[in-house]
Length: 276
Image 1: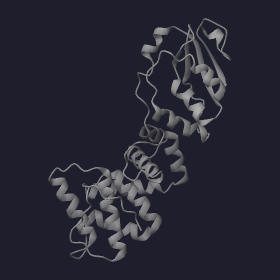
Image 2 (image 1 turned 180 degrees about the vertical axis):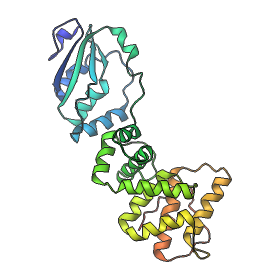
Image 3 (image 1 turned 90 degrees about the vertical axis):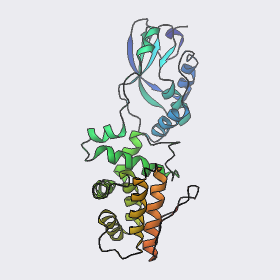
Image 4 (image 1 turned 90 degrees about the horizontal axis):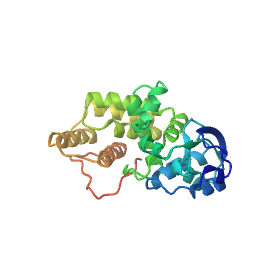
């Protein structure tokens, strides 16, 4: 087999690049030549497919690559995503490469959401990125941040465009963490975003009190929160982010209800509380 037998590809044995509108039907035909590649990662396909279905997939110079003998060297995940999304996507395609070129493909470091935010000139870019990924997960039902599905860079960028107030949540998270370094910035930022949507003024007061613990009476929920996370940090207890989120939400709900808390508890197998 060679690329001459594959539809829509240049009839040449020399390295050649061309831009092609890749339809689901064309992707299916090309993938029949995918006989020598790494194992398909379904999560990567799902991530790409969401971007394609949303119209967020741009021509970016990364190519679908074919060898001189017609084998796909690079691009099986993108082609599979075209099929899954049922979208037609414009892609750069390179043909006529030696088969051994596959060994040097995809050896660079992937550009992270933090890198993308930094390139856009965002303040606290990597913290903002971590908050965006977790807010996206929360909005999609992953309240424990398991990472079974994670946002793509384009989904994070769209989330920020839809909710520019997340920049403020990031600023508050960094400031709070600096004053009280026992809760991850990512959890603080997600919690600030969620709580501010419920009661912005109360959220501002709440995070200031987490930071300084000032003028709070004995039994106040924020004091219980500060004591709990400080104790676990000093005991070197390794806590998942989901427990920090549960602590923050339980504390917020108690404050909203006007309840006292002498001790903050969240059993490991308990369901995630929802802020109110």
